[in-house]
Image 1 (cartoon, rainbow over the protein chains, first blue to last red):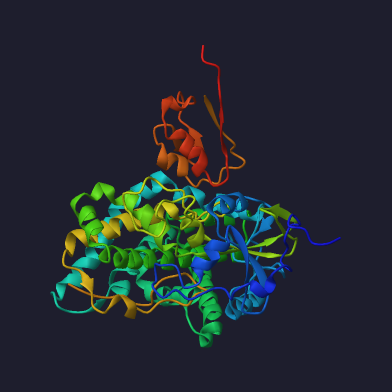
Image 2 (cartoon, each protein chain N blue to C red):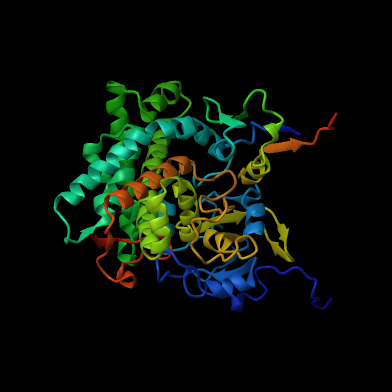
Length: 416
Length: 67
C-alpha cells in the first residue's frame, strides 16, 4: 500500500523535521524563539529531546484539554519510556522513587492527593489571607527600611520568602530553618547548568532528611498543622508509611517555594513593561484576581508537562503509540489564537480564561488557590507600597532560568 | 437544569467553587458539592463555565423539562 494523505502519522513520520526541544526563553515571560513555528504546526507536532528521542508536542488548547484528562497518558516518571527534558532529570529518576502526587498515576495519586486536599481548600486558603498579608507587609517594611535609591534583589527580599513563609506555616515547618530549604528548593526545581545535575538530587535528599527528622520531632511534640494532622490521622493509623509522608511533605514544600516566587517576579516584570495596566491595577485592586489569572496564562511558567502513552491514542490524524513520549506545552496552549484573542498580548481585562497554566486533568496544581491568594496579595501590596518601583537593570539583562526547569529568573534587581 | 458532581472523579481543584460560589462549595474533605437548594444552578450564567473549567469533567448538567 502506498502512503495516502489520510494515513495517520506516527512519531516515525517526519522525525527529521522535529526541532530540538526544550528551547531557552530570551524574555522570561515570552515565548522562546522557535515557538512561533511550533504553533503554526499545531495542534500536535514532533520535537527532538536532548538524547535524540523524538516526542509529541501538544500545542493546541482544545486538543490539550482533551489529552490532559486522558487516563491513557501516564505521569509515571519511573516508566522507562517517560520523556525527560534533561540529563539532570535522568540522574534524579534513577536514584529516587517516584515523587508523590506529581510523578504517579491513580490510584496512588488519588490516595495521596486526598490526604492533603482539605488543607488547600478555598476556605482554608481564605483563612490564611491575613497571615499572607502580614508576611508581605513585614518583608516590604524590611526592604524599604534602607531607603530609596538602593538596588535589591526582589526575588530574595520579597518574592521568595513570602511563599516560603506561607508553605512553612501551612505544613508546620519552623520558619527559622527556611534558609536551609529555600536554597535547596531552588536547586531542585530551577538550578541551571550541567554542573548542577547532582546538586538537584542532593538538595532533594537533604530536604527529605530534614522533613523526616521534623516528623520525629512532631511525633514527640504534636502541633496543629498539616504535617501534624497527617501524622495523627494517616501515619499513626498505618495509612501511609514514614518515607512516603516525608516525600509528600518534600514535594509540597519545594512546590510551594519556586512556583509562586517565580510568578511574583515575572508578574512584576510584565506589569512594569505594561505601565498602563499596572496603573489600572493600582487604582482598583478588585481587578487583581483576574489580572493574576491573566499573568498566569501569559507567563506559563510550568510550560512543559510530560506524559507517556500507555496505549495507542488517535488524535487529529496522528497515532500516539503506546510508549511514545508526549509533552504538553502549557505556554503554547495558552497562546493558542483559537482560544484567546490576541493571545500574545497581556490584557488584565481579558474575560476569565480557559488557560492551563496550572495544568488540567487529575494533576492540576493542588496549591492553585493558595498560589492565587499569594500572588494577589504580593502584587497588590507591592504596587501600593512601592509606587516608584522599577527594574535596576535593562529587562533583557535579567538572568533567565534554563529551559528544562520551571521558567523564571534567578534574580530580579529592582530599585525605587 | 440539574447539576450533579461525580465525587469519585472530583479532585478538589475548587474551580467551580471559585467561579460560582453561589452554587458550589467544598466539603470538609476538600471535595466540591452543590449548595443545598441550588441544584438547578439558580439561573447562574457561569454554571456552564464551571462545567468547562473542571479539570476532570466531574460536573454534569442534566437538562430538565420546564413545567
